[in-house]
View (spheres, rainbow, N blue to C red):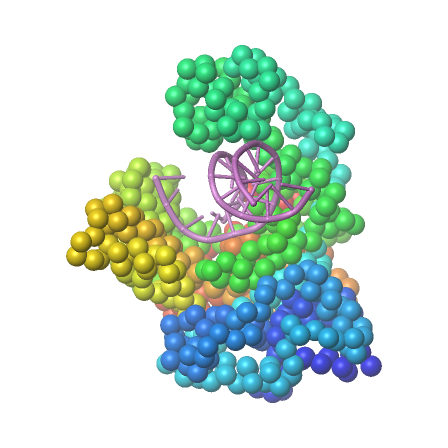
Amino acid sequence: MARAELPAVVRDLESRERPRWVWDDTAGWYPPLLAAGVRVDRCHDLRLCHAILRQSELTAESRLAAAPRGPWDDAAEPSAAAADEGLALFAAPDALGSEDRARPEEMREELSAQLAAVAGTEQPGRIRLLLAAESAGALIAAEMTYDGLPWSAEVHDRVLTELLGPRPRFGERPRKLEQLAESVRSALGAPELNPDSPADVLRALRRVGLTVTSTRKWELKELRHPAIEPLLEYKRLSRLLQANGWAWMDAWIHDGRFRPDYVPGGVVTGRWATRGGGALQLPRQVRGAVVPDPGWTLVVADAAQLEPRVLAALSGDLALAEAGRGTDIYQGLVDRGVVDSRAHAKSAMLGAMYGATQGEAGRLMPRLARAYPRAIGLVEDAARAGERGLKVTTRLGRSSPRPGEGWLATQGRAAAEDAAPADAQRARGEAREWGRFTRNFVVQGSAAEWALCWMAGLRGRLAAMADGERRPHLVFFLHDEVIVHAPVDQAEQVRSAVLDAAAEAGRLLFGGFPIEFAVTTAVVDSYADAK
DNA sequence: GGCGGAGGCGCC
DNA sequence: AGGGCGCCTCCGCC
């Protein structure tokens, strides 16, 4: 009886060949379906789509956007616990009692409001694609958690032991860390020093005559003192131990799999976030532990210089697009004499997209602006809009939030006739800060859309390659990079699928604009070998 | 003893 | 030195 009950699922009849399941929340519904052996082809995630449509400038005139805040706005990020609850509900729908789960008629109503909002836009195809991609992302996230990233605890332990020494007893420092701590203490003449305490370390550094304002790595690197080298090494290894050490392994690796909890749409720009496990910050040091099952391999693919390419296409900057054709786009800038080294090119491009004003990146900006006025003009316009408190919008229609009450109040005070200089200065600082956010938003958000389309297209192609239980599947996604776990004999097919999907994503977002989305692929037996 | 900000650093 | 995150410890506070 359970299957037929699916009380909160509505079927959208838009396509009879490839039905799209419409539900309130993929993270709640899909995990139990996966556990029951069901794979869903397509869906429309009402919660995720609602969030986009409420905020988007393209649907600002819709009934959905104009309505007061309602349950679809308050819907809390579903927790893993909620997903477990979903499992229980699935097994025994009578036990419902879940006020936080929408009823079918509520979902039908919300769906029609969403469809109306989309239909009311000038180019409904744009936002329709965004909603489809966002929803596909939700399916992929659930599937990746279910399938898990293949992880060798043995390799991981070996890496940790090599770098830190054998796993210590609870509460003790690993041998290497203890040795480094001792070196730091003796170099600073501070036998009681706790190297984990920034305040403690700062005091000790000053006591030996060093001029420092913090214990940040980049500041310490400038200092000459025998304590610095072991201190930096201590910080590096301590970080590894704390973030991805044995405790992390115990908590997150089970049966040879790492199953992080991905949060699609978890970042304002549309990037994913994760909850627990820090999956999006896996340090290079431990990537060697990502190894395929016997008879399988990893296809690691990375969209090279994704954001500069997205910027070129967004702004219609043919010169910048051309610089990236057939080559590394940063090298393209060097070849065209815009800057003198790849490092400078990278620093300048990233600076343009983040809003650098000082340092090397700041100095290179004028050259970049002269060579690529359209591209730089686009990010400058986005910054100006943000400084004035306006929204900006990505390629497919995700809009930035408006600044908060506090920000507006500060700007208001500064605009008054008798504004104090200090208020005016603070307002300028905050305005520029919001401008840097909106400047980056358009590029980062559009790049996230490209990545979602890429991954959705790849998922479809992989599904078509399924060979019984030997099903190549996505196991990792990191903003502009994916890992596919595939049977060895399917690696080449997967590689083609990755490239085809990338080309398709470019066409979906930018039509015929001549931008090339370069993708590097590596077929490897360890994630560490991918770069 | 729990909470939350600060400091710090990993990833893109 | 400039965007987006998550998560760890420390440390002051209730």
